[in-house]
Image 1 (spheres, helix red, strand yellow):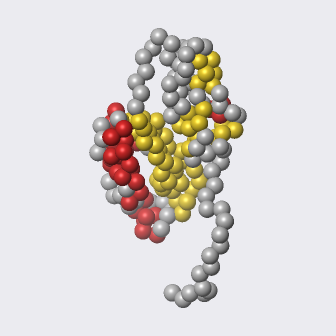
Image 2 (image 1 turned 120 degrees about the vertical axis):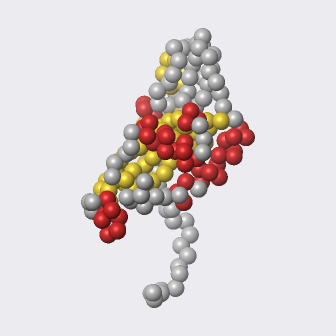
Image 3 (image 1 turned 180 degrees about the vertical axis):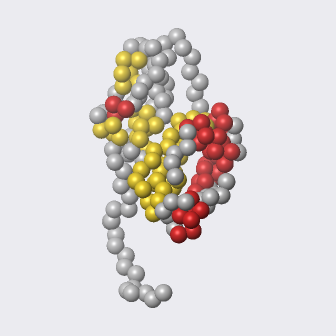
Length: 180
């Protein structure tokens, strides 16, 4: 390896970009709801909530990684359980997205939590990406899909805080293609 030029510091540069969320994709729960106060376009990490016929909404919607996450409820006579959540989104490469139930099981096992604590599971398959020669040999094909996977983990405040380091380590526990 040969250094072609000395490192250059460039301040004030774009380091990340997130598409806005569509506010109309936020679906309020509860029979006392009359819609949401979500704008048509939601900026990254912005929140909104259900609008209730009477009373106030429980919970909020959150725009995270171009996807509306979490739940907002106008319960009326129904009951609501409140708690803390840990949200995460990961980039992965796979031949296809697993079913949501398979993904819930995989995430619960990897995080060593009860499957009921894993909620809001999603997998979105994107474009084809080339595999390394070894991975292509093991997979039996030269490409795979770029996938975005994620979920919400429910718990009390202490449990949610304890979960943060485990979730942060998920990308470090990868499995090569062909290993099961």
